[in-house]
Image 1 (cartoon, rainbow, N blue to C red):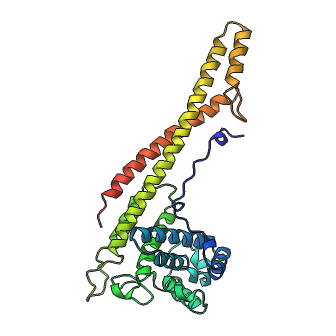
Image 2: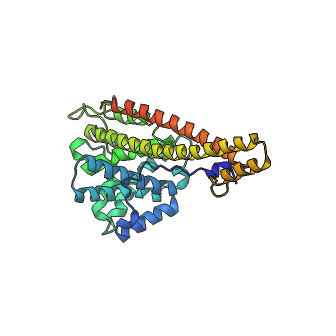
Image 3: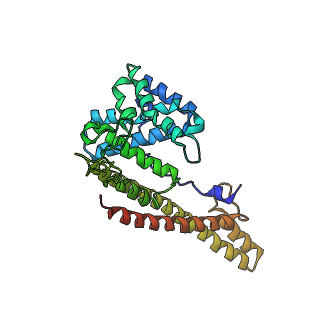
Length: 314
């Protein structure tokens, strides 16, 4: 058994605070999600993440429970059209050609058409159809402007962008995540490519929703800090136990009689846990020390990250 296996695993999930299980949805939507899962695991996970972020944003925006549930269902289904996009295009690592990007963009209308043909899914067609529309008119599929875009789609767009950035950069922690927020904040600024006219001074993303996203990320980061601090407390407790064992082993090694040495060895064994022995305890102890130092470093970085995020301006 590896000494690292003696460490209790520290787990953290960006989305576990308000995670909305698929079982809460009606049977028709569950069926669509199962189809997504069988075709593309990444898209399924992304859809769940976007739904949870959307739920958090709706709470921060103080939206009604009914509208929040509606938005979350729309978010779950926002990428349902991707089940019709060829996997070699959907999962391509390199840069997409114009033709391939055009096919990718069709997932909005494909998802919309799927929903419109299903009585249970029809009320949530706005999620798939509008989530890539931008306030400044540079989005797709219709190139709509600010007030023409349903509010639920404006929320889902921000949630979708955030999770796409987090997933692409493969964050396992909120360390460095402020850079992703900076990109989204840039999307609230006026784009040089935006068409002239009534909404020429609009960015792509709704500023209020992005402000709420920052608050959601701060909450999640502080929650992660709390989880890591709990884990650090566990490590500290274990290190104290190992310190007692080591002190007893030192007394054993310096004992002048075998009787005394056996006494201290037996006393030390009383502090051992399952699968620990006097032969491997030093290696395990070193692993705990390393983990303690590592987690302390992570917490310090997270505190710095919170400081950076709190200073971001939209």
